[in-house]
Image 1: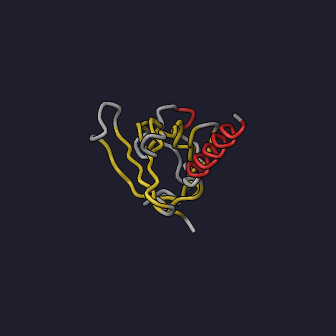
Image 2 (image 1 turned 90 degrees about the horizontal axis):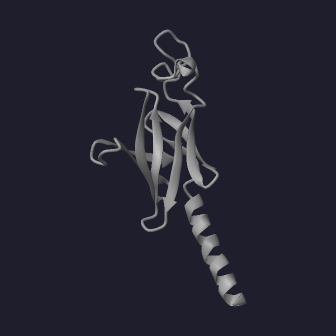
Image 3 (image 1 turned 90 degrees about the vertical axis):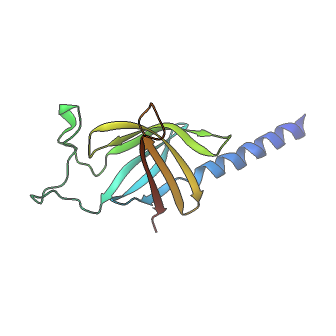
Length: 141
């Protein structure tokens, strides 16, 4: 019995550390983001933008947010991924929400760690995985 408990805790520790490899800073095509744990889920926030200012030279704000109270919030610092849960069967983080500040819409998504320095993000409409966009992110140095 004691050996079974030790073996189970060892397997759980290995699984948790494998899941944690996705945590950290990542470069997208337009920003640097940080993926972190929020409880048992994955979340992410925008750390910096490649083009941080608008045409008037002011810091970009969440102007397309459907909530009028959030339209003046800065895009840098914005929490834009939430509720991604790890699926042990296929090694993906699934059923998360992706908020896109460029259009103010929320998409469903999956994240898969391709290797330690590359991840694939798939964001799509809830009705179909095929109606969406895929991105490849690289680990920030």
